[in-house]
Image 1: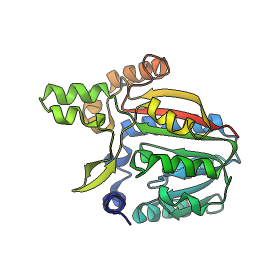
Image 2: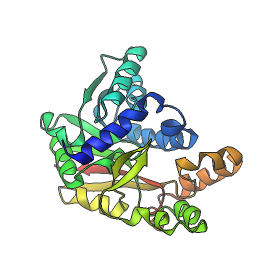
Image 3: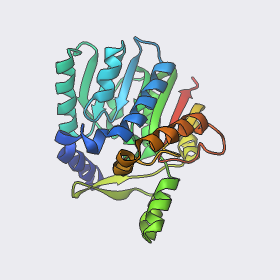
Length: 269
């Protein structure tokens, strides 16, 4: 196991117990989650077999299974996998959700063309150690015409520029423009993270035979989830900004921006 993979695994293991709270599922995160799930449901009929990449504590997997999907949920964090298994049992959905302790680099453990669709929420794919390799493995396990739905942390986040530039923290304001994996602190540990422009992410998958079918900004006008205190002070303003996000996030001039972007791509063959 590489040091990068070990660091990321240990960081998420350390926060798994509390991850359903403000750290991993605050009100702003829930807005991203709900919009990602909406797109998943619009692209796959109930009964589809979906792979959850980076399932965390299993909120998405259990939600989709409860609405009629078959889900295989994986995570590189053993503690997150334990939380997901517990949530599945509590919901009585063992027949609909399989949970496995696997990283993105281990997707070749699945049979070729196993899944109708793959989804990944809240920037899990930003932690892929090798995105080109991960993309190839996703292509391998998707059925012909299968789709990938992913909410991914973007490179151009206006709120972040404004926040850190206003404090004179220029290095932090420029953080997302680094194209390599970088250590992002989490609970005193490191999560190795790479930020993507939507066009770069699309190119990685188009090179292996995927086509873009949908793209929108998430968190273009709405602040990033770590600004939850701002949300709590100004809930009416955030509701208004969310309406702008939802109405304008797919506009060509805006969809390369935002804290996250939500992308849907389809395998051609």
